[in-house]
Amino acid sequence: MEPKPWYDKGLRFKCTQCGNCCRNHGEYTYVSLSAVELRDIPPYLGLSRQDFLARYCVAEPGYHPTLRMDQPACPFLNAEGRCDIYPVRPKQCRTWPFWTENLVEETWNGPVKACCPGIDQGELHSREHIERTARETDEWY
Image 1 (cartoon, rainbow, N blue to C red):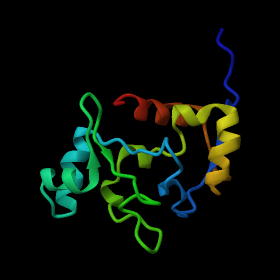
Image 2 (tube, rainbow, N blue to C red):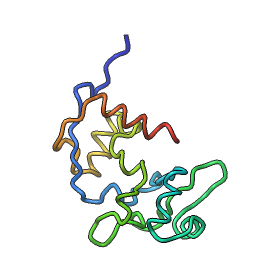
Image 3 (cartoon, one colour):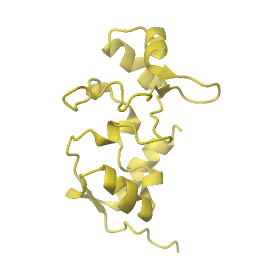
């Protein structure tokens, strides 16, 4: 029998819409884009796929294109701290903070909690929900 994870009884999280998760947090800050997102985001912005890729993305052979994060924040985080592409935001953004790499107890209680004031707040998310959300994100990486 596999041991229960440290979050077996669930984790509390409520998005406070602070925008912290959209800000650059060093060398590991990236937002990968799936084929569906590359289909949906450009027309939402009134751009062709090629123009969107040239203006907002970095593409390296063998990897999903990623948003260019060479500024202090995501290029779609506006001055009010809101997402300009919220209805079509990437899956990686929609599934924060329940990413596999964040579900290491030291990571959750360290850098994730330091970045996100919504950790330990609001709704109790079940282990099943947390793991389903993490798998959803992992499946296309």
